[in-house]
Image (cartoon, rainbow, N blue to C red; front, side, top):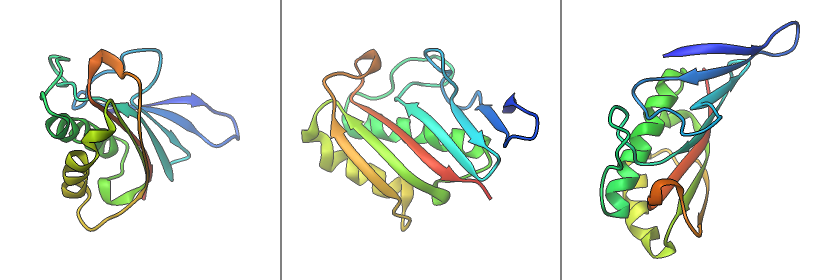
Length: 139
């Protein structure tokens, strides 16, 4: 993984975070951005395999598992972890998948319960069923 400093001088440092253990960004954005170390902003993650960039899973639960795995890899690359996540946004193609995704989400976070918003979207990139992003603390 690497950090690329975006701004310098005496202002707080903003650094892009990237890891080969999660899919590369599909557009003009970073996998995550760290702000002066204590805060990591992870871009939306969809269920792509990091090496093949193919969609993983056919069900919302299977896709949630891969999207969260990708998010976890980026958290690690940025010096954080799922246990330090402060806020998550979950976007679903179908709100009917809420319960199935909640089960996978609960497995991923365990006893840790970050603040969260969840909503249905008209469509998501590559026709996937779920996208997740988060804000995390960095020790």
